[in-house]
Image (cartoon, rainbow over the protein chains, first blue to last red):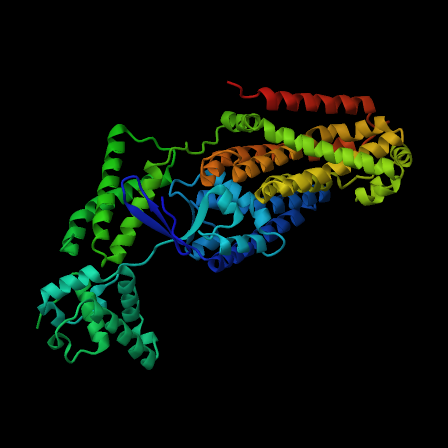
Length: 258
Length: 326
């Protein structure tokens, strides 16, 4: 098992295969917590209303019940939801986060209970200062409860598959005329840069014109360093068209060479 | 190296879809037992998808395919390589998990008792040296009046001072004491220092109260007042302290070469069993404190209250010492 530092946790299986979790940043976790806090507020407001109604029958028992329900909801909210929704509370679900075992194994009930009970220390002295500090300092963004329970909070991967036809619809691809260079380009390019190019193409209309030109210029320059196509291949192509052609090449559907 | 990714994906996708279906079923029904054929098939699919992921690693230009396959392999890994039994909420195993966890860590419990007794001794000493220290050591107003005067007030009370607020008083006691117990466990994260301070402070208060009433010749009242709820409440907080020291021990790992992550993993279930068990005890203690402990002679004879408290202590000792022994 290997630990990444900062943004992801990589796990190597006994079969020698690696997979990784994207770690949730302390800021995203704080946002999820704010949503959870609001949900707890709504729940306790509801139980308070119920107890107010119950007070018509017996004020003492209604007050006692309100105290117990507040305690149970504030402690049990995270435990019940994380157990029933396999590592998610309402806030985590909205922000696409999930509690997972730090070794990639199945999340256990004891881990869920422990990380939620230890929240009492993470919340000290106020507003999650201890937990926040621990998350910033920890290699895997873990608050103290996560460290003790052996859990991490990961971002869910819900990226839709890129639609290459839409992103790079050019019928003719001048780069395809050089199969040895396109093969080299496929072998050299890394997933991160392809992701950036896909994002840049899909959001192109949202950029300011000058920023868009600069972004595609930078991306095209980067791809040109990986495989140097002859001038004839890129003649008359704008940087954006060049990037789109590269995307068609790396996704294995190069189009016609004319 | 894969030359034609679309063809590779088209050929392998049926296996990925099949694994996805099996995983969805297993995640929806964690207690489902698979037949030998199903296990073999799951293992085959897992290995095939792992191999596909490995092959995609050599061809880094399909990030979306890689990510979805990675997610599939990680989910299958968590099921195939998990050796811990899934949580089953069966009443017998759940009930006995608490005493069994307690008995697995006798040293931590002895340490919790020792620290509390040390606090008691300090409380006794501080009050013997100067009785005026009472105002500092005891933060409750009803404990600041002289014991003899309080006993006189309680025994001659004409009306029930808790009338109409017993249930809410019990609820306050339950939640407050449960919070203290959870904190005693959680402070184990400070390498046990927080747990030590909390138990010592509790001991100081307890020692000061006992010394005050014994010095004021009100031992009988004290036993009748404290034993009915204290025989459960005090051990419950000690159990929280035990959990805190177990947690601290796993963090520090004296002479233990096992990685810290493994040590913490090994004690997680015990910590939960002890704290949840102590929480249940505190529900009982809070109820007894509100409905029994606050009523004194002549409403409830001291002898009866003391006998009740001793019976609870014996029952708790038997439960923790012998329940669930194999």
